[in-house]
Length: 121
Image (cartoon, rainbow, N blue to C red; front, side, top):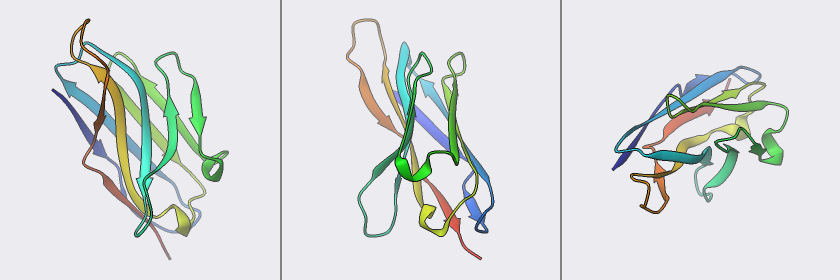
């Protein structure tokens, strides 16, 4: 079983910065793509950014140039650095990791519990 623990959410003023971190633990053989999703009130969950094991990144158009995703493969962790935050970035942010528990097990999607990010003056 894989557990994801997030940290770093909170309240920030428009234009401010926040850093979200997520660490995977448990019975991990390998971790493929890791990423961050978010869900605002009354909206569906959307991809914010993702990063492959090799470091290839993908960003939602709405966050390009403002958010940076990175990962530490040795620690099975992923970080989202958010700058120039806007009120529309307000949402619950979820960590996601595609991982497997053994060499022959299938990759499965795993989710963190979510962390609230509120951008407001």
